[in-house]
Amino acid sequence: MTRPFPPIRRLGPEDGARCAALSVDRGWSPEPAKWSLLLTASEVFGVDAPDGRGLAGSVTLTSWGADYAAVGMMLVAARYERRGLGRALMEHLLRAAGDDATVTLFATDMGRPLYEKLGFTPVRRSVSFVGRFRVPSGHDGHGVRAATEADLPAILTLDRAAFGGDRGRILSRLPAYADRIAVAEDGGPPGQGIVGYAAAWRNTPASTVIGPLVAPDGETARRLVTALAADARTPVRLDLDPDRAELPGWAHAHGLEPAGRNVVMAHGEVAERGAPGHLFAPISVALA
Image (spheres, rainbow, N blue to C red):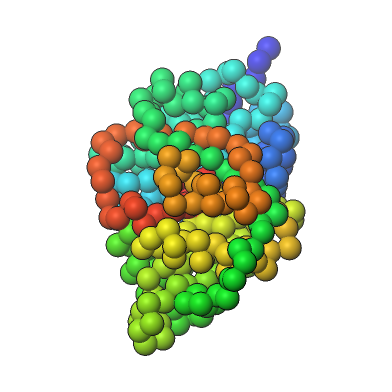
C-alpha cells in the first residue's frame, strides 16, 4: 500500500543536508551554499519522505515585497514522481504568496506543463551560456573596481530602482555568499557614482555564475562581466535573454556556448516594474 505524504512544512537551516541530498537525487549539484542562503533568507517548503529517507519534495518562495515573488528549487524525489506532490507544493506556495502577488519562475521543459495548468504564462526566454571566457583584447578594467562593504547601500538603491522591488533580503547577504562583487562607476566621488554592479559566485566547484548583473547599458554590462570572468578559474555561466542584443552574441564570441534553455513564466498580473532594460542577469534561476 502506498504511504500518504506527511503535511507540507516550513524548512529551516537544519534541513540543509536534506535539501542538498534532494538536489543530488534529481541529478543537480548539491549547492550547499545556495541552500544555506535560501533557507535563511527565503521561505522553503518541503515534505518529508514517507520512507524516512530525507525529503520527498521542496519548493522555495522568495518575496520581493507584498505583491511580487519568485519560485525556485521545485524538486520532487524521483521515487515520488507522478503522485501529485509537485502540484501540492506549488499550490501551497501560491497560497503563501497571496492572491494579489505576481509570482515568477524559470521553467524547464519538464516543469512547464504543471506550471501552465496552475495558470502560469510565458514572459520571455532564458538561455544559459557556459564556457571558458576569453578576455577581449584591450581590456583594462577602466571604470570597474571591486566592491567594498561601504558600497552596499548604493548597490541596494541602484538595484531597487532597476528591479522595481526590494531584493535587499538576498542582496544584503551577497558579500558573504559571492566570491567577488564588482561595481561600475561614472567618474563621480568614490561610492557615489555607482551605475552598475555584478557578482560572481560558485554554482558548483567547477562552475562560476555571474549574477545579478545590473547596468545602465550593454557596454557597462560587458565591462562588468569581463572584470569578473577574467579572473575565473572555472567555466563561467551567464543566464541571458537571447532576444536582447547586448550580451548573448558577445558572450558566444568570447567562449560561452548555449548550454540550457528555460522559459520565464509568471502567475498573476505582469506589470512593468523599475527599469527592466537595466537587468541583464538574475541573481540565480532559483530567484527569478
